[in-house]
Image (cartoon, rainbow over the protein chains, first blue to last red):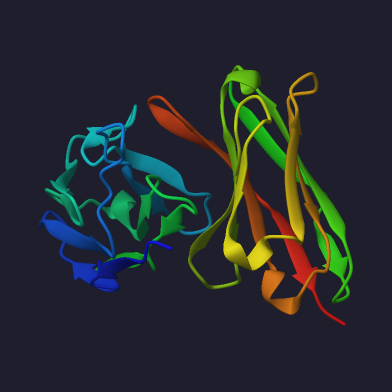
Length: 112
Length: 116
């Protein structure tokens, strides 16, 4: 199975400052169809998760443009350009290229 | 408006069975693959199973293979998860979810507790 390793696991951030989460995979996420199926999910406290980013860098509908995804192959990053209070929660990378699909351990973003 | 509502969770003894259901509305259920994702108390997300839009292909995480079966009834817009030979480590909140173009659809989850 593909192992997804996120860092850091805990990320205290000052409001208005940037934040960055890394996701490294144990094998390439490039699918035979040429796409890279790397998603980012956000889970706010007490809520169900929601997808923010799909296929590395595509924002889902309604996701603020302060969120951006980048990367290729086995190394990926989620960036928040200026953290807001509503961004508090746990962020997960997830790969959909290989079966079984797998999530990272999660990164908890909190306000300092 | 999209709605995804899971049901069927509860407390069951080790070795027992449960059948989870997920009723979907507000989107064309029959055209989307569907997932079950679980979250043990205080833990992260774990992908469990997927079924193709037409029900003709399924995938499972290794830890549930041979014990869980995912299925769907497109005429009822409903997804199922039959869980047999349950173990304490299956205790979790089980979410039904769909990765759709432009977003994802999730329910609120149904809690499964495996305990004697």
